[in-house]
Image 1: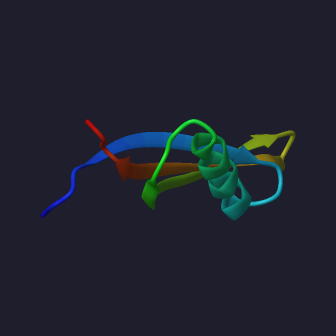
Image 2 (image 1 turned 135 degrees about the horizontal axis):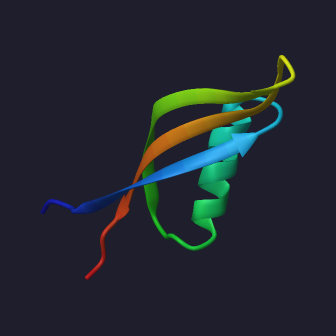
Length: 68
């Protein structure tokens, strides 16, 4: 029998790296969503202040199992 999954979009931030930003988003979402399955990175960007990178942002499309 098949399964159904819901997709949501998350944005994580970090002052260290895009990878840390993704981990932050998943860890935070995992506190309230159950059965997270797959995350796809859809966009990477960063913020710049005074010519220096101040934060990394990772946008993710995340699926989790839909339960009736």
